[in-house]
Image (cartoon, rainbow, N blue to C red):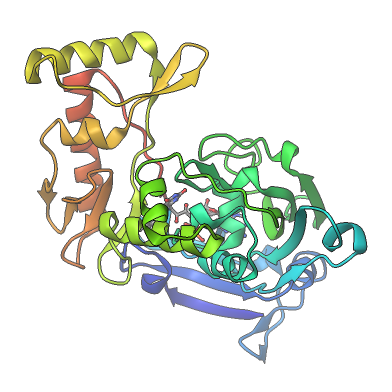
Length: 362
Ligand SMILES: Cc1cc2nc3c(=O)[nH]c(=O)nc-3n(C[C@H](O)[C@H](O)[C@H](O)COP(=O)(O)OP(=O)(O)OC[C@H]3O[C@@H](n4cnc5c(N)ncnc54)[C@H](O)[C@@H]3O)c2cc1C
C-alpha cells in the first residue's frame, strides 16, 4: 500500500485541474483495505508509520482516473485509489465450458479500455460498444457507463465491494445495483459507503452485435467483418472524431446528462424550434417510456449558439457541445463552473429545460 501526504492530483483528473489532496492512498488488494480499516498498521510508502483509516484526514474520496470529476480546489481529505489489477476468466466447467456465456472477474483498478481490448482479442461480445471510455473498471460499475446503445449494467453479473461501514466484503448481484441511466446505488443511496474491488461480467461467445445506434452499423459494414474487434475499431474511430483526447485536451467527457422530460416539454421545444428555424427543423428525441422523452443535451446547447463559448481557459467544445474543455490547459475550476452556469442558464432561458451535470463536482 502506498500512502503519500500532500499528493499532486493533476495527473489524476482528466480535466487537468492543478489540485492536490492532503493524503493519497493506493492499495493493490481488497485485504489491504480491510486491514487498514480493521486493524490499523499504516505502511507509508514502505516506511513504517503507525496509523489506521481513522487517523487519515477526512473526508474520504475514492477515485479511478478522475475522468468524471471536476475538482473545485485542493481536496482537504484522503483520496483512495485501487491498484487491484487482474482479469480472470472464471474457469469452472459451468462458467467457461460449453454454452454461450463467459464469466470474467476483473479487478477494479484495470483500465476500462484495456479490458475492452482484452475481450475483443478473445472474441467475447458485450463491451465492444463501450471501447475507448476513459476510466477504470471499478468506476464503470459505479457510473453504469454507456455508449452506442449499450450500458455496462447490461453485462455485469456481480459487483464485489468493501463496505466502509462494516469493514467487510459484500457482493451485489447486478439487479441489486439498481442500474439506470448513468446511475446505480453506488452513486445514489449508498454513495461513499462501498468501494468496488472487482466486477464480474457475463459476456457472449456467440455474435451479439448491437449496431443500431448512430452511424455504427455503416462504419462496421465498411470494415467488412463482424467481430468484436471490428466493432471496437469502428467505435474508437467514431469517438476520436467527436471527443477530445484527454491526453491532449482536458475534459470530463459529456458534462451534462441528456434530459429526460415529459412529452409536453418536448412539444414546447419543438414549437420553439419551429418558430425560430422553420418547420423543417427536427428536434431529435428518443422515447424514454411512461410519457417521457430523452432530448440530446448537445442539440439544446448547440441551438443556443454556444459551440466554442469560452470563459477564461474553459470552453464549450466545438466538435461536441456536450463537452466542456480545458482549452488552454490552464483553466481554473471557476472557469469551468462559469461556462457550466452559462450553459444551464442559456438552455433554460431558451427552452425551459434545466440541464443537470453528469460530471461530479468535488
Ligand atoms: C473524453 C471522455 C469521454 C467520455 N465518454 C464517456 C462515455 O462515452 N460514456 C460514459 O458513460 N462516460 C464517459 N466519460 C466519463 C467517464 O469516463 C466515466 O464516468 C468513467 O466511468 C469514470 O471512470 P474513472 O475511473 O475516471 O472514475 P472517477 O471519475 O475517478 O470516479 C467516478 C465516480 O466513481 C467513484 N469511484 C471510482 N472508483 C471507485 C471504486 N473502485 N469504488 C467505488 N467508487 C469508485 C468516484 O468516487 C466517483 O464518484 C468520458 C470521459 C471523458 C474524459
